[in-house]
Image (cartoon, rainbow, N blue to C red; front, side, top):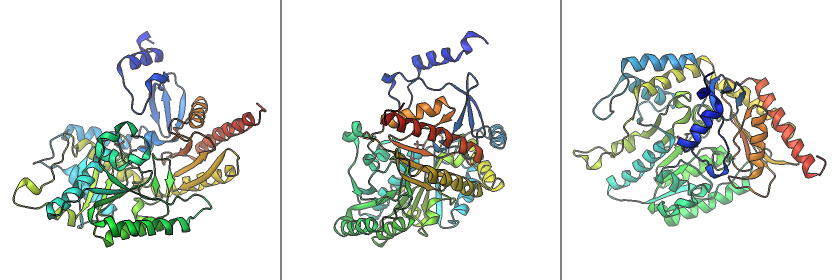
Length: 447
Ligand SMILES: Cc1ncc(COP(=O)(O)O)c(C=O)c1O
């Protein structure tokens, strides 16, 4: 090996040239120098393997290194690599829009607006809801959100996600929002009283402030980055119906929940409520290229029609509807069908459930919860902030044992790719249990 190939050299070059996301470089923690991946396994430059239990920030669905996706990308890139999407169209974008609408049960009743990441999918949804009111001649400013929501890192997305706690430094940049209560649920705790109280409060808010609210935005069934906080489909449906009664557009941010994560292809399909706007990204390409869509009802789309540009949506990105990313998304949809991804999620769900049941009475954890292919629990700790040491210690221990985790503060979650085997899940839980038992012994002064 040439000395410039050595992992330490890569880390030195990285430290000299790169600024990483959501990273405090002052702490001097080194990133893992990754070199390859196949299935649920990632490999570093020294050949060490890591089970990807977080689907590489929730994007990977069918496993790493899928030849089906690679072929779709290389075929498309030689046909049409890219063209601007204003004044031009192409087969991959049109076919993908048709297939997504079909999957969502929205053929003929909605349109697909393309962008390239989860935050832009949210920005587009917020702007569509905002301008809908402007175009009607009755502008409204306020967006309603659930406490603890996270919707991305651009300014609009941060504004509706300000209560996630990530954006304290940016308060001065953010627009005002209306923050609503969210009754959390976990294994053995249905929280029906909490739901009733929350809905009563929200009903009152709508009576007083309803006419200034431009839209409601929620992460359906699970608030992800805010700490894998679950609410029930019953609450979500009633909440959404309340806003619909007031003719306020309802936005479901399915950036994380889309493409099977919660057990149904889209989370909203568990509620029987069809939102006015749906944001999708992350798993849309199977986790290999950036792409996003905002699906908007025809009612919203029609409110932008006119004879001049003033009512048109002034939003677009250079790589909107990139044909190569669309081709990857089409190949990913084929993989969902050929690998029965919802069947895989059901299997993963069972296995996660079995393991959570086994550790649910452990003194170091509380609030175990599992939904579709997502499992989470809270580590008992005084510090529950994003940088909580309990989570960091667990992540470090897991990494040393070949398991890639990234707890959200003191919240440990698992969200693996759908190709993960039950044995790989067992291995991950073996490591988690070893950590919990160690932590327990240390707290009792036995270590
Ligand atoms: C629910 C939700 N919305 C939006 C986003 C932002 O997506 P991106 O990181 O692609 O901008 C995320 C990212 O984690 C998310 O979980």
